[in-house]
Image (cartoon, rainbow, N blue to C red; front, side):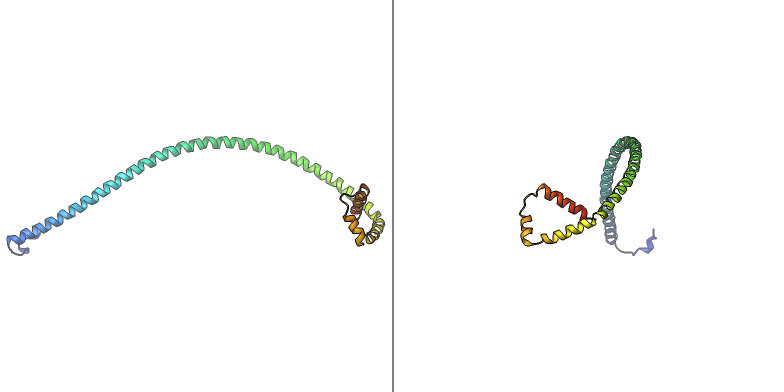
Length: 167
């Protein structure tokens, strides 16, 4: 503290007022610090409660995680079994694919044979085209449109024409 000579030599009243003002300032500072301490304590209590709740939640989550581990291990076992079954099915599919390739070769041979027969039928298709040109008259077309179901002979003829005309 500064020596007494540093203070102005005034009356007792001045010292009393100065002391009172310092006391009030310090009292206000203590009240403010006390208020802040109460607020801090309330916040600390709230955070401690929150921490407790979080710890409880973590414990609950640990149990859930353990249960999910058990389920995951079961699923992994199932995946292993299903993988084995899929490998068996894959082998079967490969066999089927090979059989399909053989059947495709047979179908290609049949298609080639059909194409050969179609090439032999080209003169017949030219005759059929000429016949169709004669059918295009409006009266004949209206008569054909009037059929609700064509007769069997018409169906056979139309199928034959389609086979011949479609390459």
